[in-house]
Image 1 (cartoon, rainbow over the protein chains, first blue to last red):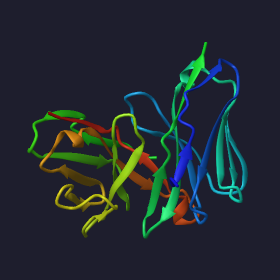
Image 2: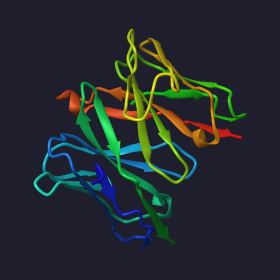
Image 3: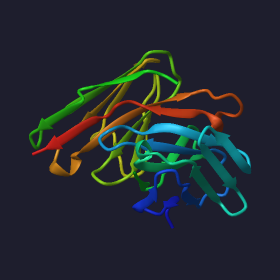
Length: 112
Length: 119
């Protein structure tokens, strides 16, 4: 079983719709969860972090965490063409350092 | 966050040669990491660059192939040694920034990456 699993997509949504990205993880003791956005040819950019069960909102982005189900999601409201990118889910594991394990990413396309 | 630069941004190298990648951050950070992102794949952690001591390597990565230096709290280098075409990848450094709360909550920010092609 992979440490972090995501649907690779591609996920296509029309402009203005809600995009829903999902991630599951295997290590029950993970404490922190991150969403990165990566545009083609660019490096990952941190957009959300979440540590507690429930929802965390930041502008058009909402991260949701359910530790019992080992599930993290990212909702993007009012999707824009500029949101078209690959979204990477990352989960920490403490090994003396705060190491992150990444999913393979979900490619999102927002259709104008 | 932090401002991170990497040099070179890209390079094309011959098989059997070595390339050293530099990572510079604009503020002192305790933790720096090196990742690899192979074409069409996600990020894989190579090692944690420890200041003043040997780097900590992940399974599948060894010091002879990927020697790392960390002379101070703002700078690190990764060398890809005796390269083969399988080493063609994007190499990324990241730094950890304290977010408040437990250390597990600290956030990582990435440099722009070095795109390496080995012929």
